[in-house]
Length: 432
Image (tube, rainbow, N blue to C red; front, side, top):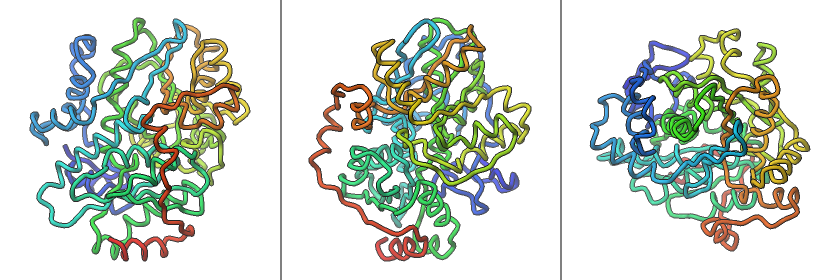
């Protein structure tokens, strides 16, 4: 499997280099040279396959013979070992629950697969690999859990101070061992900018082996395509299937576009955002205007300059008239999101988190004009991760799974830092 940079298609690297380096030197993003269609027989008979078997076939289709099948199967079996069930609200509206992994967020799929893949590629290396990751909430916890105690790998998680929930923060800051959290006095976009600048810093990279665990790394997107097939498999009605994706950095939606390109018959995509509506605005007007993010109760989507927009443009050749045929965009403010959480609870007796509620509202709006579609909302995180907001909205206790509840009493350990790249670089060089 070879990949090119979205900024220079002549810059081609192997999968190993793309995964371990994370970002091309020109600040583009790596994209597969070829995304082949899967056999129609496989698509038509998904019900004959387990989730892990689907993941193996999809990953093999993307990766080819670059990794021996036995090794790839081991990577899949160690990473895709928890379910992604579909729960139906009614005949035309369904929830794909992606929070059954160790950190209770969809990013467990990408983080665990990436950890196994990096560990596989890192064998025999003498110098430790330092993973840099920026998080607006869920990525950090998933990466921390996925890479915890991985030999030869250290993880540095940057997160915006005061802008993640208490339990999300505890997931980043209480593990210790090879996981370190850096609390930046700024926004997620500031954290992401520091990570990207680190990869472009030649002096830093000559001293430290750096890689990324954000969705800028192609190893995150490959496994996120798996559960689109798994969701489609579980639907009884497979006609005009629409996926509604609560979106921040747009890796999840891009992975869905990969699945469609591989032959999964997806009728349409819905990009659902909170007040950070850069992509819905582009889909409406044709103008892309990134800007500083604003804080919302669906904090994992608080992204004002989504990295994976470059991959979306690459897939469509930056052709607005074509992309808007496949993707519709909607955005909602916090008060609407709160109403969405309450409506789903009252109407369907289902507890949906603020991110999923944004997806629910978007699908509801879309189906007003497209009533014969069958919609799947990606529920990206367990509602207990946002317990304060959830209990305030619903006026009831929210169950906290034990693996999250135990974190409440653990002591937070983080390095508080100004939003300054030079300070971060000096700290990194002094500690790694």
